[in-house]
Each structure stands twice: as C-alpha cells, then as structure tokens.
Length: 74
Image (cartoon, rainbow, N blue to C red; front, side, top):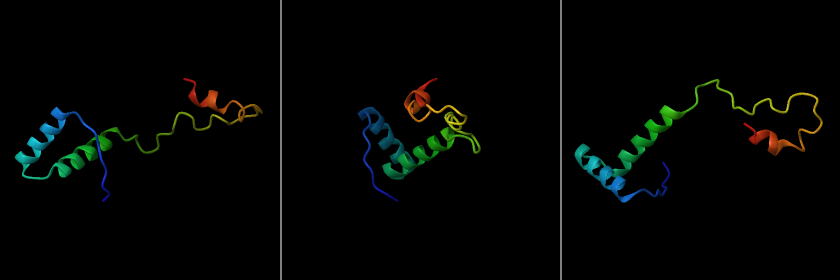
C-alpha cells in the first residue's frame, strides 16, 4: 500500500469521518473502499479499444506530422 494526499471539501471529509465512526473503521478504509468501488464501476470493459487505436493505419505520409490534430479530433 502507498500513502497519498487528497484534497476534498470540508463537508465531504466530515461525512467520511462520520461514516468511518458509524462503521467503526478508519477514514482511510472508507476512502479505499470508495475508490475501489468508483474505479470498478468506471473501468472500461475488457476488450474495449481506445478511440485512437489504428488512427495511423494507411498510406497517408503526413500522419506523423499531423499526429496532434488526429489524436484530438472528435
């Protein structure tokens, strides 16, 4: 496990402290559990490719020069 620092609004930290007290656990444990849930719910599905994968395929010789434009176009 690795230590880190987060910044959060005071009202949110108060809620986390109260929840930790209710669950008889530490604030760190409540935060870890919340992070694990959030990441699990928002992780891309396995096999989902990124939108820019394959963008450079083809015979266009200018792709290397236009990479920024191509990566950020919608």
